[in-house]
Image (cartoon, rainbow, N blue to C red; front, side, top):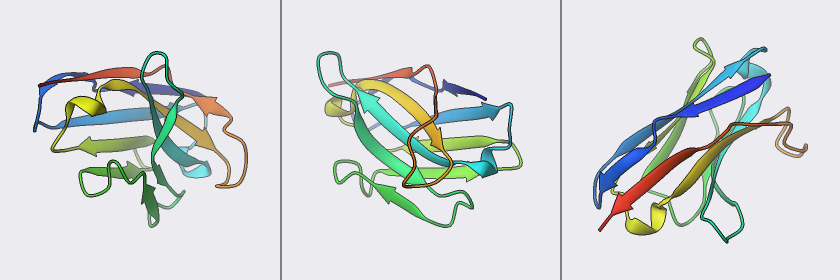
Length: 118
């Protein structure tokens, strides 16, 4: 199984970006999918989670109300819509997959860089 994250880039404060994570090798519907982010020198932090069907989501407090996670299992893709971006959202964003919400993460994407300018 491979995860391919894309969609990062440079955006101004208040702007929007949509990240995508394509799952290949096995159906994405087998996995709970998460987005994480990491700033150099800091620990990786949880951003958002979506269950296998897409009917349940959860978010870090820092992004709640601004970011939306969704998935299209027909396309084996998970999305992170990021609105009202702030400079503190600048990070490398990673997608991750695991069979259940209480199991270890088994697959990680390579990361996509998001830079928000002030």
